[in-house]
Length: 196
Image 1 (spheres, rainbow, N blue to C red):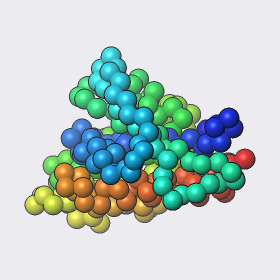
Image 2: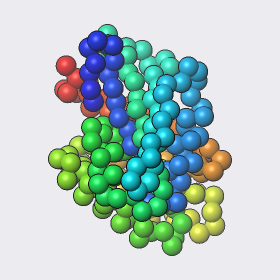
Image 3: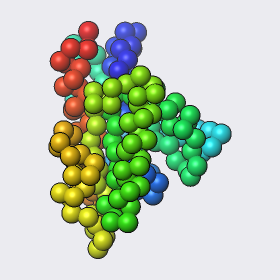
Image 4: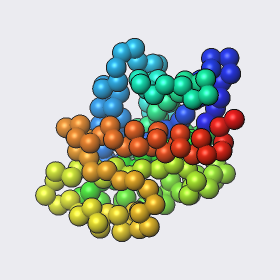
């Protein structure tokens, strides 16, 4: 979280993470398409091994916090074969993560591997992953081989520490809720002590 005193803004960074083809891109695009005008900046930045997309917005109706308005910066790393360096770079300054898990049974190990990689990358960047706001988006709930939510929770969120949501990103079902929840969690944490 970064306080910009000149613009009177609290800048919050949210990153979509998760395994390849889990629905991160569809979630990101759907959320961006539903933002009211005026929308903030949208950038698509090529990197050495992939592409990073980014947009920002000021949530309508949120109001001000101690005289500051909130600006949310949302990032996603796209493409196959993205380097670990690029993923770590995107996590610099992160306040919250939306972990998009693929609900399909045959993707269970990919979800777990991606979650371990996220936690490793957060640690490499100096974060205590338990203190970074996180929500789970259990995507592809409409597919016939989707694992029960209880099984996904047991594998990815065993202590039920983080909120989770059932989503169908291809149709926009439930996709906005994880973003709202992670923003809420970040702001609650900020009000609890780190916002000065």
